[in-house]
Length: 342
Image (tube, one colour):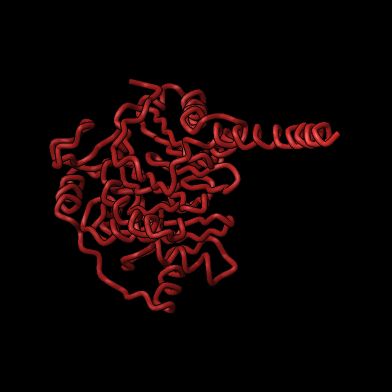
């Protein structure tokens, strides 16, 4: 009788534990490839940005802190695409755009900001201390100064100054595809003008921390020689950046007006919500731009970069030449994006 009771208990225990074991196995099968913390960013210059952000992530810091740290790093670097050394508008004035978004859907942004070195930090201050999302122009500068940010004169980088002087000879505004000053001789160097004028002008980065939380940020000096007052997608939540901590996050680079027209990064995240991989979600957003005006699409570049909650990342662009950088515990690499035209 005792044997029967023991056997009965064993069978009951087995009946209870089998689905539990199966659930655990299923969880392991689905998430064994999780790779986080991880930070991904646009362009090969993202390698430096990722390294700065990784110091926070590898110490179990929050993704949003890593985002700000990475963006501040490139804002500190005298270059032609981001920060006070970036390409000026057609009037010779450097104006900066930035945004940031955390795992709770808190977000902040600044646009047309002049003479402030770290627009990403001003954007975070907007996010954390005001009821607003976006401050622009003089109001953004006033807010920055009132919150302890120093006013500094713009100091064009050598390449930005040279490019602006060259542009002034004709004053023609025509965005160019993948124009990047590749003096570093990177492995995926796209075409560039003889004067080295850069056109990709955005640093977008996305991070997932050890808790699996997502955040993102964007910082830029905007498209070279734009009309004074022009704001692209980089400061627009849902265009240049979107984070949904239940689904994933996305950022973009390229001609911001085209991204704004389709609410690009929000669209990418929604495609991921439908079950698409990050790469496929980016491709579908690119296809939306191309389909609307195929002939125009041949003359411009837009690239999307995304990551989902499983730590899977992907990118897609209109034209060949869009690259992105990845840093995790397993990887530190530049990848070339797939593309629609080329």
